View 1: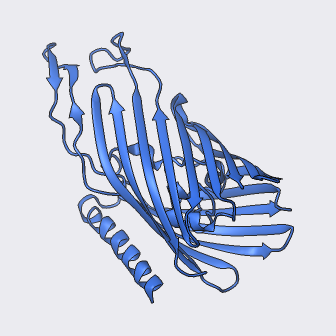
View 2: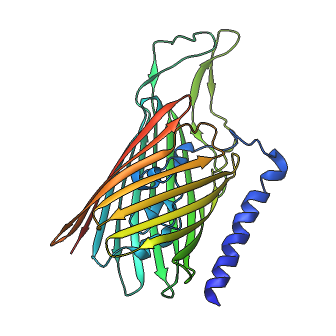
Length: 333
């Protein structure tokens, strides 16, 4: 009964978050939220499956996708991951996280995401080729996670996050939460998951910005409008079509409903051979810039002290180029 209560609350909160935006903005809501770096997937495994992932995830990367997923990590004591994303326009995103089991069915996690645009020239409508000055955008998110396995089939997780965005001399601070659960249906190796990410109140930037107005005079801006948080509601299913000692083939689908864009629907697959080699692929329908299908691969190297994983993921956008991700994982003792 308790697990169905959690499922009902998650679906209700997700629907409520969407209903606050949909009547006002309809189907076109692009540009209605800030803190856009929170929407960039930080890991290679999910990227290779076209981000159809919340019902599949069973490692440290669950701290980004679905905090309930950390209850599915293997029996080692400590789990670490670090990732690098070579994003569009020569921007970069770094990710690091750790998970530890603290009780028979309880888990704690901590994560960090760091985005850096690099130096960019300052341009204005009067000086479109640059003013001779430069600036950079630096974003950071820190999260603390608690997850609990309530039964062999049902688990939930909750993450509290502090987020900071710095663009030139303007700073934005926000506090938000992620919530998710995973449920093993118990029929034909299927799993069901729901996640709500970046749920929190609006925030107002602080600082000042000097600009050249239409009269040719320098003007200082320090009064900024509120920024909405880019919340997203996700619903996912996963099915192990083949589950043998040397072969594991998983299919997954996921519906994504962000508050600042149209819905997308992803399909992904992952094949694991001999607990060593991963091959992944998928496609995301409804995205503005999707071109080629996503793909990726990984290695799981077993050692006496634990195991070491290396994953690569590739995504392609029609007009803005490709995104490459590399993730390293380590489990100890």
